[in-house]
Length: 120
Image (cartoon, rainbow, N blue to C red; front, top):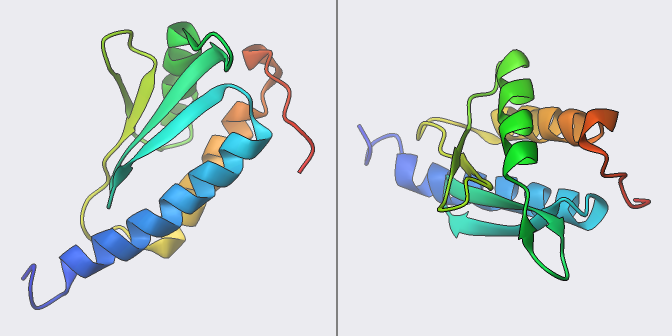
């Protein structure tokens, strides 16, 4: 099934699309310190300050909970619990990636995060 439905190729292409969207959000939201990963296994490191790289664990937890409210399941990871781990199923496509990016943008725009977006 993985070969016949080209799920590895889909993971690589959709993951690149999702990563590009997350990089775009990074440009707008200073809370995002780094985007890393390959394919559909991606991490979004949240920091309180990009200069000091002070981890934003509480903010990461808030984002995960708010995304769950919006029916997007992600988790925190990393030693300091400030990395949001994204690992959707192999059948995840561009449409679903766009939906996740939209939900991330909504949550990151919330005033409770106290991290204003940079102008687009």
